[in-house]
Figure 1 (cartoon, rainbow, N blue to C red):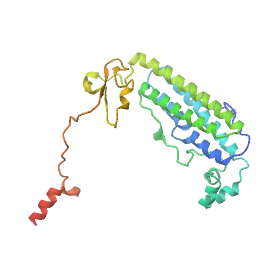
Figure 2: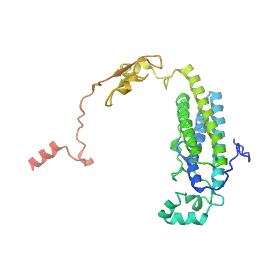
Figure 3: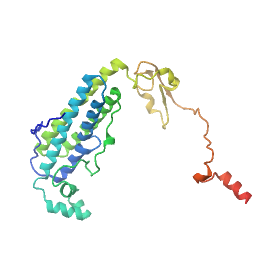
Figure 4: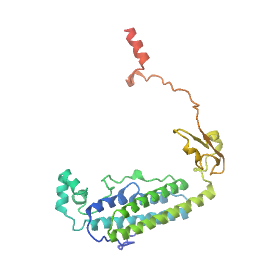
Length: 282
């Protein structure tokens, strides 16, 4: 059950209208790494957690907070659109050239949502449920969460650098700080699970079923050998179960593939030798 409180968690009041920046803020709402994504990702992960109540609560706590972040950003977009030159935006929607001159305002903010935010990114792509990761393996999911928060914080920081509006900066500074905490939180949860399960995911698959002789090799498939200088190229593996090895000139194990012709009713192009043989028969 969710309960909506009318007050925002943090304030979202820009100093002045800015329709162009409203378009940019859409990335933090409905982009691949926006607040809609992390909200749904954490909630679905939490709803799917079996047992492990403390992790379930953690996911639902943060997922619910992220819904509030969507509301704050949607409010910010609406206020950035207050007193915006609506007639000019409508004209921009009719003429791509005018739209370019006006600096790329989003005409959908007028035509579709009536001066409100959209569930889409900064160029109008609709938010998609396929952005979210919820696998049922908490260690794998928490690593995905860390990635999402890292990308989200990066984008919020970039937007912070694009504006001198104090009110906008105030809200972005909050989101940047919360993303910093969420990164720390997921790193802590990952470390805790790694202590229990080890570093590899999934930990439940028997290692003897793998080709362990290739499990720790770095194959050089680039010109030069710069990648050989990393921690990943030599020494004990980070999972504690092997030794990294750098393979400067990897050799193929497999043979050249030779595929049989497709059946006639598939109507593929015949191999050249068969085509030539057919012509000879005619």
